[in-house]
Length: 296
Image 1 (cartoon, rainbow, N blue to C red):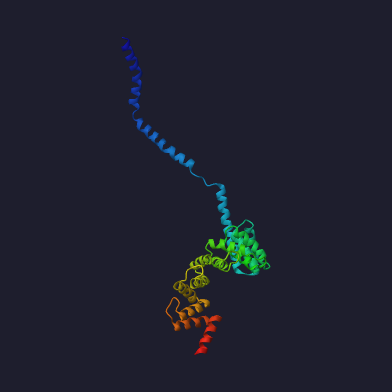
Image 2: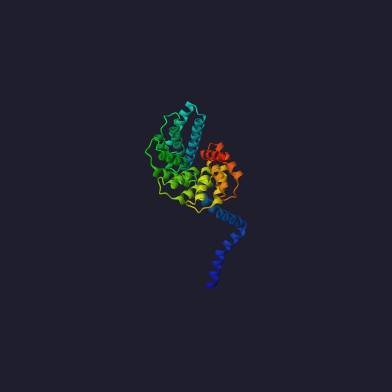
């Protein structure tokens, strides 16, 4: 009897819920769609919240970069015109940019002081500006600073510092800096004499297309200084320089054809290259040709 009462009580509780479910069953698809929408929306909201938002400092920096580029271009345009008022305007703009540690502007101020454009010519002042740009890794400024330090124009000569700055510029692929550093190693100026290092830096300059480096490296291979003697390699280097109207290479090429070093002896080619060098005023070629003419 008690059990039947419980069943009836349970049935009484269940019945309304079941009936409600039957009456509302059409709402389940809508409820399922709502749940799925929420599940999809949550990661989308999280993604929006977590996405990086450009900072105002980045935006300001971008605007500043654009303004610097525009002002720098304006300064360069004025400088290229080359008139007194143009130089004056260019100098003022470069000075403003240089005060904000813009290395190209610092380099240009150094150049204007070196050339005496709008301002009195002064290598000492130029060196100050070149140094500021050089310390920021500007390779042309490093090269110019090294030249001033090597020549001692307006500053005390310092071969050690010159070699240092040529080296820094050479690291960035400056071919003439590499060539000059090769010279310093060959002559032992500012560094300990080292023919192998001279050859290494000449090779870097050769790779960059420096004609003088072709000649000097050719001499090292011809004489076996810092590298093994290799007449064929020397000939190939001299040939490139001779074709580019390098008088000393033309003279040396003429000599090697006369002696048969790395090539078959050929007096006609020897005379050909010696005359080429003489036409460019090479004194050694002129002297050799005069002796040959005297023998004939």
